[in-house]
Every structure is written in C-alpha cells, then in structure tokens.
Image (cartoon, rainbow, N blue to C red):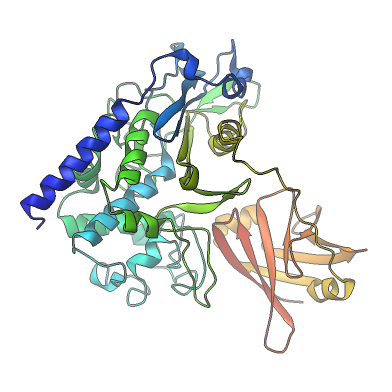
Length: 458
C-alpha cells in the first residue's frame, strides 16, 4: 500500500500539473499559425473528415485548431475538443501504468512472465522489460490465448518485434497486480487525477459525447464509414479514446513528474538494448528516433477510421499532437497524423530544425554486392508474408543491388556496406555473414519496428 503522505504529495503534484495546463490553453485565434492551417487547405469547403491539432512549446500552447468534419452525415465539424480513437497511442499509457506499479513495489521490470502466465511459451525467459520494449518475441496479429499456443517468433531479447499481443499481456499484468480492471486502473491513477474527463476505453456500444465518426476513402473520390474494430475487451494495446486537450494534460504530467518520477520517465525514453548490445528504436512504450537533427520521443496509432500521433521533442520542450478521423490506408486528402505532426514541428520549430539531409547512397564495391546475390526465404507471420513476399531474390545490375519479391524489381540504395533501403517502402535490409565470412541471411526491418530473419536458400 502507498502511505497517506505519499498519496497526498502525488495528488498535489497532479493538481498542480492540471492547473498549469488549464491556464495555458489559448482562447484567441491569433495563436494559430497560418502555415499550419495551410497544411489542411485541401479540406476547405469539402465534405471530408479531418483532424484536431495541438502544439505546445515551453509550456505555452502555440497552435490549437481543428479541420474537416467529425460527422459527414450530420455536417458536424471537428473541434479541438472532439473525441477520437487514439489506437496505439494507448501503449504509452499502458507503459506508464506498469512503471507506476514498479515504483510502488508491486512488480519489477525483470519479473518473469512465469509469475503471471506460467503456461505461456517462453514464460521463464520473457520479462516485463521485454514486453514493454517489444523484444519478447511474442507473436502479433493474434489474441493472447492464441499466442499461448504458438512458438515465439524470436528468443526474448534477440530482436525488436512490435507486438500488440505483448501489450495485451501487459494489460493482464496490470489487472492481476492492481486487482482492478485495466480501465479502472487508468481512470483512478491517470485520467481522474489529471482531469482527463474525455479519455477512456472505447466501445461501439457506449455513448461517448463528442466522438468523431471514423472514415476511409471509398475509391471514387468520396468517403465511406470505416468498419469498427472492437478493442474494449483487450484495450491495453490500442483501445483508448481521447482529445488533444486531454493528451496535453498527460504530456505535461510526464514533464512534471506527477505520474512517474523524472528518472523513470528518462528510462522510458531510452532505447532498449537487445542481445549483443545493439540498441533499437523503442523504449518503455515510446518510439524513439530523430527528425531533422532533433531527438524525438513519440508514438503513432492506426485503427479502422482513425489515426493518431504524438511527437515530443524533449530538448526543445515541444510537443505536437494530431488526432484524425481518417484511416491511414488507403491514403486520404491529407497526410497521415504522423506526417502532419512532423510537418507541423518543422513549421513551429523552424528555428531549431536542421536542414533536411539527402538520403545516403553509399557506393559499395561490386564484389561485395555479388556476395549478396541469391534467394532468401523470409521467416515472418503469414500477414507479413502476404504483403512483403516470402522469397526475396537479389541481383546486381551495374553498381546497384536490385531486389525482387514478385514480378517487379526494386532498386536498393546503400546506407553502408551491409544495410540497404528502398525509396518505395519503409523497409531496410541488413545482410549477415557467418563466422566463415559467408552471407547466410538478412534481417528485414519494417518501419523501424518489426525485424524478421530471412535465410539464404540459394
């Protein structure tokens, strides 16, 4: 149990955090940047879904606006206080809950899954740390119960494999340790203390005032209602809804140390290290990287009819939040929430952003490229194989390595002598040699978050 004085201190901190946020929300139009508004010009005068946007710098809101319609049927516009599903932006909340329980001595990051799901494959090796950082090897695209009947995709700690299922397991751990439901734990320990009154677990059956409808392009220049993806029974991976104002309260609470200690927040923002000492682009519930030379801590989310992104630039004390009621795929009339967040950051942090650097194109000796020529079989879930292909073939055409998984050929560009990328998709390929120096496999990295092994067959 947490003693009364500690509870009082934590409550006081949370209240201070809320009050500080409430006093900085602007009420005047002049705070909006015309350059940001211009990003949504394609929606002007059109019956189209859109987004809500909020950006804060040094504790002051510098842009707060909404674009497009929350309901095409009723002609209701999106507003800054419109409610959206936030999909995988839920994961940082789940991670925060786990870290709170760690600080309170209810569990430890190196506790084994054996304590909670003793019959799960690899339960004696998988730790909470592995689950938080997507390095547990837990299969994705299946339920926890289904995953419990499958082998792990990789050994715990071996490589980064983004897994919604792994975060569903974390939700079960929160419930087992706290003795209450995932929804009740977050409401009691995060939402109510921060006065996040428009945040909770989404369900189609619930009446949620102000919730935007979710849409997708219909392929004919218009829009259709997106199918609803129910996540209420397994909400810890992507089941929350929220507003940009509520997410600002949460963002500021992270900075103030009101939810978890500053040293714990700093640990959450550090990249995980997999076996062999290699760092990956994920911390405790956060995607990690750089944009135009600035360190970025963020997370994206995509669920039928909605996509969301929060990008935090800790060194500049800047955060931008974009919530949209359009699906990411197929593409709509405006960029994705992640693309918009980055463009907005480029506008509002123009004084700090470094010039955009051209993509690398290292010249690799033909003899080294020849070592990579051959056919490789990808070891990945069926859904990945259906989209990426199962057999990869590589040939050399002049000074360029060319990849092929179907009828079309894709030229590859070199980041180094071993790592190559395509300008047509968010994927990288790193070739691996065995102890004898022979190329035996490559590692396919998709969007920086999923790593799969492909073994040479010819």
